[in-house]
Length: 425
Image (tube, rainbow, N blue to C red):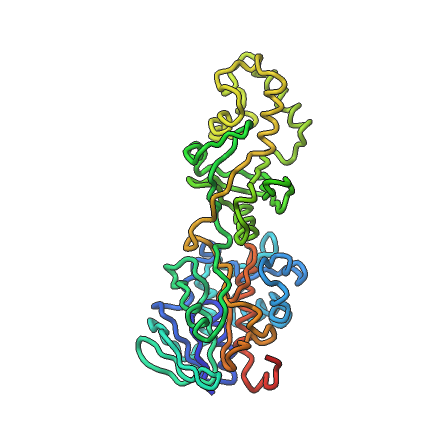
């Protein structure tokens, strides 16, 4: 039996290891080396999985979690960690159940996978698949820019369409479509959010120029919420760290929210930031009043240093409706309460998500309804399988996405046509 694997990233490499146990395997990678995107994962440290219990794991899957039940049950984080440990890679668990190589080097993860492939997998680098031939509902031949290959089984593990410099340029989508598969429109996931305006206390719109005052500022222990513009219902909320950019906002809690809203109409929602989530309105008003008493004879712009980061002050003042030159002792109670409201409800109108190429992962891809979840085999083409980011599944940060890539790769690689003969299509 001959298996062709298209793509040499995380899922392609792992799939090749398991496929090589019963098949001759050829792995085709268009880059000059394997694991190019894996190399930069986790800022070069490679958060390769998350060892949270399975039920908690699925809570972090944004798209089609039920589709992944079989994959995660078959090859969960415990089994993945056991695989790497047996292959000689030392691991460690950090905050939030995130698992890293003990060395903090993603290259060690890649080397471990490469060593597991040695003498078992025929690796072809710098070779791009450009087409395939289909006959009698089976792929019979793979065509590359360097030759042709007969095949009994094909696994597409080409990744998504983010970080295109790593080779994730969406090649697999075109191949899947040629095989008759539906592609759910791809969207950025785990992405910065671009804002259209920030609103002042009176509903006035301030353009992106305002953000130049706070670009690069990181805020910890804030709460960001996605709110329905009309009903004011809070749809999603996250607590933690965020970052102002030249075009909007980013940082961990923003990345999470971006994956929640990337298929929503952004005209119907707003982003609300609570700068002081530990204090309710009454407590925060008491705190502001105390500061005002201390700086009673100062100008408003010089009274906020104990309340806000220095670079945030010139950003907030134009939104407050209070002149920065106004004496603190002449600020009215209504003005002070409006200011408190602003600190609890800093509101952004949304424009969109950052460029797909800068997103951490891709949402969308091959429709899960057309893939058997127990084997990752196509329901349309008898000998075609999918693994990793090309499938319409995505999750939040913390190692969940790589675990999905590895788990789907395990099923795609370990299931031969004989092992699933008679499987319902």
